Length: 299
Image (cartoon, rainbow, N blue to C red; front, top):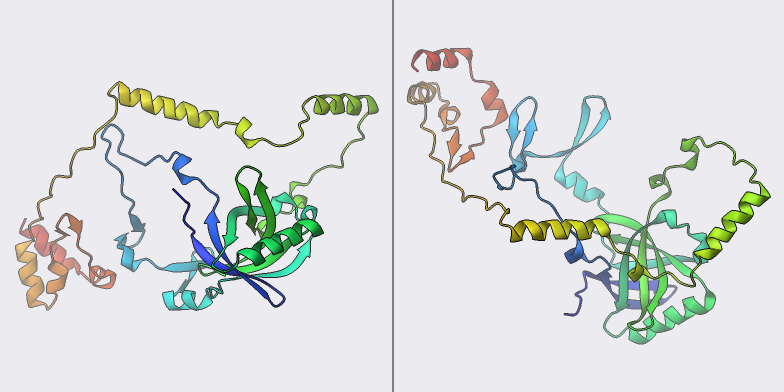
């Protein structure tokens, strides 16, 4: 089945624009994912956010904040965050061309395939050949999904499958830990005899090319084997179906008294259809000790 592009963009430099399609290089189907479950039960666990002061928080009440000091938060509204997002330009704007060796691999992050978009086949491959002849890679800006990225564009080919370009998302300088933080000592002087021996060992393992197919994830293989054994031996756990929960009965006396006090909403059932009914935090904390005494008296 042909791969589907995850986005489209325009590759531009000078007055040249080339429509391109962007493809992920990751094979998610090959990854093994585990889920958090109730041990011995098999039921998947659900995540719940809890406020230390107000208890469980519904998803619609979750915001975003930045901690400016210990215990001091600045809350940012959704509209404010959206205004800060980088506007998706759908343009990979090449700003410079440098030798590939000038970009240290420590700055490489994610990688994506680029392919010609509609009507851009000729210009795409012309640009690719120009990069090869110049022995350079392109450094570009790219804005997508509310973020701005610095990227590298380079030629890529597999003799049996074709040739294209690869877009590497790069880390910014402040995203790479400075080597100075390691507080390394000065390298010692290496004895000539030891250096010669090390070079002999390296030469014995030297290969003309890197073959990724020669390497396998042995841990992943062992995990697959173990899972297959458990399935075959019947050790898998079948999670039970959810039994419908009965709605909690309301505290009738408290509801009547709250109605007289104009606070009927505070006396709503604690649960509804198996889910916690949300009550505004401010109202919850205005419940008086008198109401609690009444409830205790009539239990």
